[in-house]
Length: 193
Image (spheres, rainbow, N blue to C red):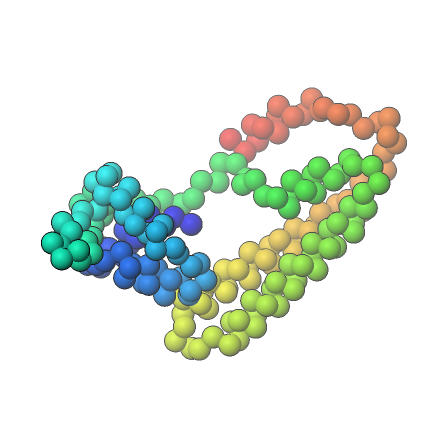
């Protein structure tokens, strides 16, 4: 999640104060990702340093600064909105790493490992479905976040099912046949690039 870009998006609607940005960020993201007010001001300071936002001088009475997006900030925002996320390499996913490492661990029932995680993700899907059902019709942000999370969780469950199926079909190896390193490792690194 790019908090700096989200703040730029909010500032593109007009100048405002840091506390208001925090409130708007949480409202626009369905209040799913709470944002620390200190993080907002630290991020605004970096954006100001980089010339993407500017602020009023602090008032003599100690009033808060009001921030506004600059032309460079508007360009950065437009670039971010139209640039797809990097998919050159698959992200490091703890679950995938856990499964890959477990493949060759002696005494580990990988089927059970997969099923434990599958149950967890199905329960999370049920929780998201309940949240979505309780959301009001005008709570579009929460509904969109719930939809995205349901699709993500469904993809993980489908991957776990596919991994389990693939593991059931693989031939059983004897411990002395398992190689520690594989000549294919160099090729695998270039597949995603």
